[in-house]
Length: 184
Image 1 (cartoon, rainbow, N blue to C red):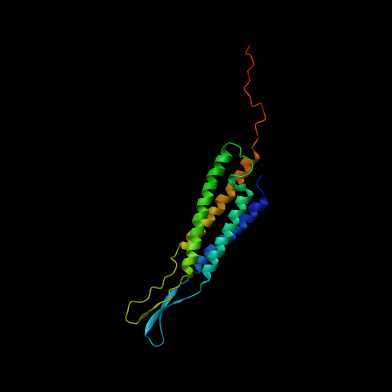
Image 2 (image 1 turned 60 degrees about the vertical axis):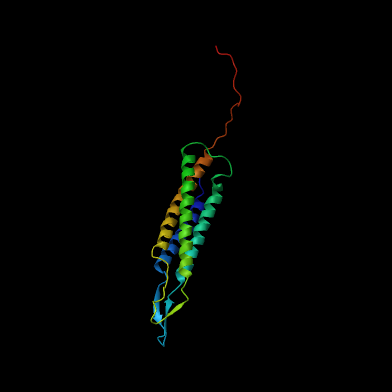
């Protein structure tokens, strides 16, 4: 049977990652164009940069949860064989889905964090076009949060399915040769 302790630890790590991803979306940096005191040039002023830290924290917590699940299940390919049947097929499908959703979540969180940390450093003369105060797009961290949620659900089901298939394996204990007895 799947370890309840592992499932609880991974659930808590994924829940923290989800909370941090949602917080990162709520606290994205915003920028305003400001003129200098002499009104010679314009420049960008950015507010709080805390969502970068939230995004990186979500990235790390989600990665920790994924590593624990993969270590506990022996990453589907190591350890003793899984018994053929529905549990093994389900575990394989969930394994692939788990890694795909994990990868998408990690890319969204990392890209959002990097983009949020980037601040335009140049300025323009007053009568030119205003500077481009680039910020992270709305929804990047939200997409990371959604895929974090999907990863949390799929990884828990994967772990249970893999544990069930691993426990029900029974090696073939009969004679491996072909019987050549006479028929009567």
